[in-house]
Image (tube, rainbow, N blue to C red):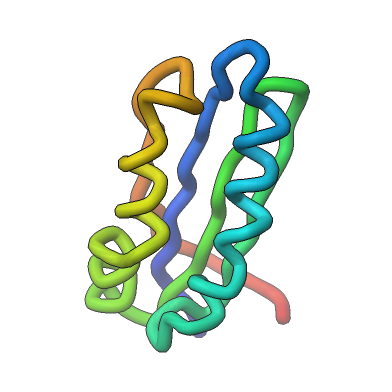
Length: 98
């Protein structure tokens, strides 16, 4: 069972919402190329709040993802697109279906 996850919360700067959504949708091919990333979801909670939720079999996959191309691209664009730094939470999954 997949046991590790990340939950990243992003708040777009006013007027940058569409760019944040486009960035997240465009990151899907990068996530698909990551061997250690089992599931990857780009999320929209409301007009300015977005997120990423991804799962991993082990800590090494999660750490590789945090050092990978999506994280690097996000940090490069963070000052331009985000109202503040991303909130990155390491999560342990207790149960899952699918």
